[in-house]
Image 1 (cartoon, rainbow, N blue to C red):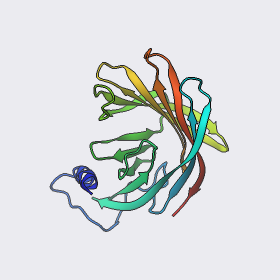
Image 2: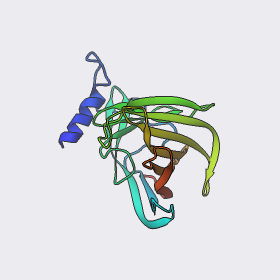
Image 3: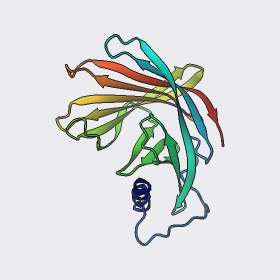
Image 4: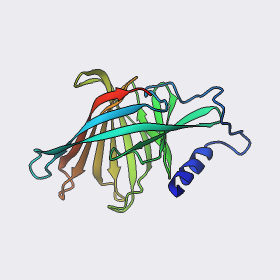
Length: 212
């Protein structure tokens, strides 16, 4: 409850003191965009784990993202999502900023989560609050062009590099998103002690999208 209260304060903080917060979805900006957002929407994933030494598959599991609530602030809809392991803080909020941008608001920050661009470009950065190394920044890069992931065509690709305070990247997330469907694959990589070689940690592949 305490963490959710902080998240709500961050969301409400997006509005100026002179603006009115409302619970009636009169305009509901933030709904339409690349990611279908509605209470009850579910995305089911198959998770594949990899051995850090060999890179071979070491096991499988499941993952799920659920949209559990909608919050209206100044006629903009923010959708609370929960999940287990995919790197989206439990209780954080998604919103479609426009037809090309998904934003996420969590207990600490509001930032661009995914972006569609016509050319490869760095499109966002925000502080990293993970304490595995001295805190640095997350850097989001969007890539132009379409990719086929399994049976999903015309998917978009974004990569988040997690850098420590020295600028050394030590963690990498690769997101593939099918507009109108959502995330169809998430890949997580870690870096070896040589600070050069990446190895796969796990991969989530979408098995079903269930509209609410």
